[in-house]
Length: 175
Image (cartoon, one colour):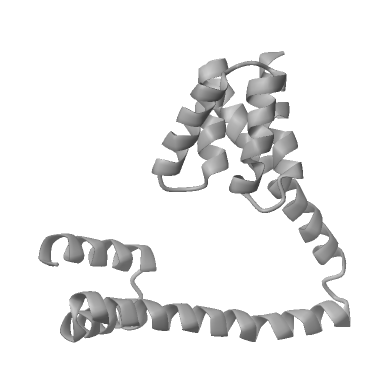
């Protein structure tokens, strides 16, 4: 029964908390503090402060911690799953609808319009990364990493994960 309560405590705010983790925090507080009484306001505020101090989405960190406190490792899993379940279900539903109409001329036209937009957004992001890299480590290092990465991926067909790992190691030791 406790796992069902953990699931509901995080699934309901996930559905109603439009705007992501920060928008669902008051809803989670209502469930955890007022409805189930697993924590008082002081304990919840400490969990919130801890969640804000760590990288990543706040809602899943809080769900994992509170779920663990209430139901152990399985409670942590249930809490995190319940937090991501509304988005997961919506994506599956949308993908099934998209798959159903994949041969529709309107859907094909829509994907034709979306592809260039994604390309431009990725280009803008790469340009910003390049500019920030140039400002932080200088032209020579930026140009070196760019050229070596390009050659490793395009000429030697090295997987991007290895190139990223190599760049991280290079930056960690030499920069």
